[in-house]
Image 1 (cartoon, rainbow, N blue to C red):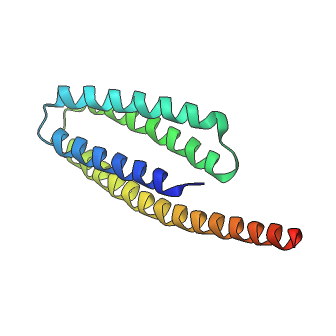
Image 2: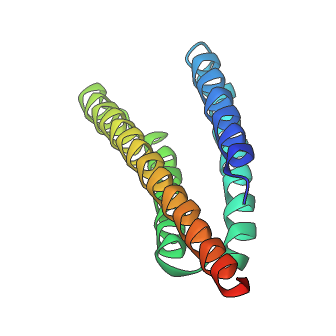
Length: 136
């Protein structure tokens, strides 16, 4: 398996996410809400496609991510009805902490992906070695 292509694609997704977040910081709340809805739709589509072929613990992680997205959507809807600046500030602090936690999780996911790829490369090398030995 060519992990380099998958890593390149992941790097492009990170770059696109960074650009989107930077652009969103300067947008009106209405434009931001539209961006969030588009992003949620994209993530939902990707998750549904991935879930069809998912297995093991990764499937559970994807399900957890889907639940988190629904939680974020509910918080955004709830935020629209808030009038108290202190409540809104607390909500913003929680949302920022949530984003920081999500970035920490993404970093751990990259570390776990690296370990999984190294394990897969080692497993393939071992299988190839056994096949060569069997042919000899």
